[in-house]
Image (cartoon, rainbow, N blue to C red):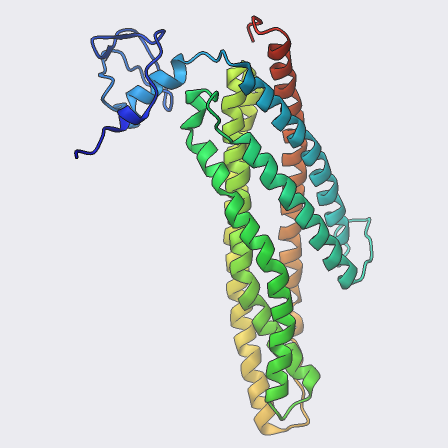
Length: 349
């Protein structure tokens, strides 16, 4: 059987669309780049960006008449508001905890065990709520408008749930591995004090375990925020909230730039750290062969690396506070518009 055309998988073009004899009969902007599609065939793509003319006609000509979509949107925005407020408060508390070098005038001294337990519990709670919230926000039941179903930002946002769950589940496993593997290696190698060997193996194994996990988490976080604000910009455009829509688009670009910069800086710091650790390991081997009384000491000039990673973490948490605060305000506005339409369906928003 011949492969069906992609157009056959899409809903029919609305009657309000300016189409005559299979061509766009009036001035009509492309949904992706705003190019004028007049005289273009509905089977063609936009000459400027390659976006489907058929999809543009659906996206820009569909009127929403089903109140169920507004009801679902209202409930998802309520969930987003509550989650954003909690996440912003936890991010603020995390900045106070990540203050080992007095970066801020205020700090809270907490033991590492309590810190790990706290972040573990809060991560599980936020992870569960976030996945449910994003799943509800990007869900596409039958009454969802076609112009939102095929948005790339919505699809990509929905796909960020899986890697986020994987990274959070691997975090406690890697913590146990970073403690167990150095202990096992220390018991199988003789010649130096166990404390020195534990320090050395921990300095080597811990980055090897957490570097891939860090990249997975940061990439997922960057994609999540970028696509969330891009998708929200389309929702706010539907309600004629043009200022908020422009702010969402700008914030999506800002998040993309900042997270990319953080990834590049982290990569550079990881490379420097790897070179320094390899040299330190060579010094350890030399001291081991020359005299067993010498012990391995972690180089003092590597302290700046730990401080640099702390700075990057604090920048990420500050960005998360701003993102969650803006998300709460935007969700509150969208919820108000959806609620107004539910109470008065004839209201022109």
